[in-house]
Each structure stands twice: as C-alpha cells, then as structure tokens.
Length: 149
Image (cartoon, rainbow, N blue to C red; front, side, top):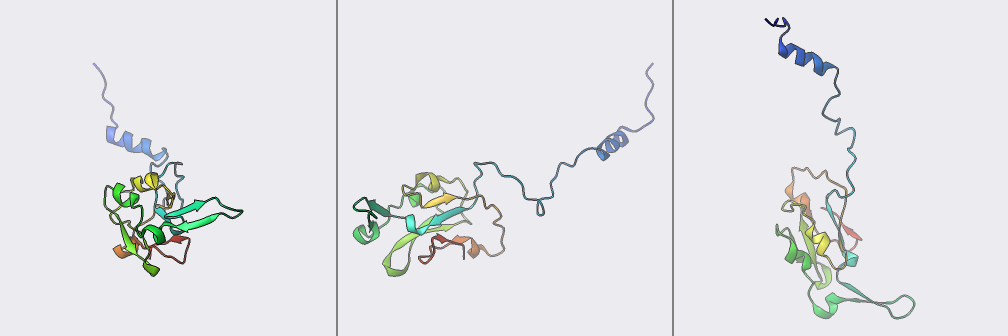
C-alpha cells in the first residue's frame, strides 16, 4: 500500500514557484530587444515619392513625375489590403499618400511594393493613444519624413 503525502499538491506547486524566474518582463521600464524583421510603424519619406533620376551630368537631373503626369503611381494604395492609404493633395496641387495607422494591419505590403522605397519600416511599436486622429500620418512637404500629427 502506498503512503499518501501529507503536503497538498497545491502547496508544493506554489512553493516551487517561489524560486523560479518570473515569466513577465518589466516592459515600460526595460524595452524588449526586437527581432530584425519586426514590423513597426511605417515611415514615409516624401522626397523619395515619384521622383525619377535621370543620370545626366555630375549631379544628375531630377524630374518630378507629378509635374509631368499629374498623378502618383498609387502602388501603395492599390496593394494595401486594409485600405489604410489614400492619396491627398498637398500644397502646389501635388498629391501624396496619407497613411492611417488606425486602419493599418502592419502587413507592410506597401513597404515591399513601393518602387521608389518612399515607405519604409521602423522599429517604433508604441502607438497607443486616445486620439485616433494622431494616428493619421499626413504628408508634410517641408520635412523629409511625414510625422503623425
């Protein structure tokens, strides 16, 4: 006949957890190390969108497709499965993409399909806010990168 232990299995389990390492991290105070292929906030560089470089001369000649054609390539708008990108007009009648991070599913299809690499991935992942209009990345023609406003 086997002898039963007088110590409850629950107590044994609780006592064993006293000496184990915690499963959680101290997140707000200690930032986690992200993998290289982490998908964070998308970054839009307005100076790279729809620019064609023709290699003539020392500095090259830069033409803006916007002034010739009047419209964007719109590949990012076409390929976005969440319809989080739309083309809006900025100063001078130019049109540029506006990214709504509130709708974005962070698949980064726009990053992969942009022919001019104007939309890039970043490692910024803390996007929590109470103002959903802060998650709309409007194109800013005066800056190299459009920041959320």
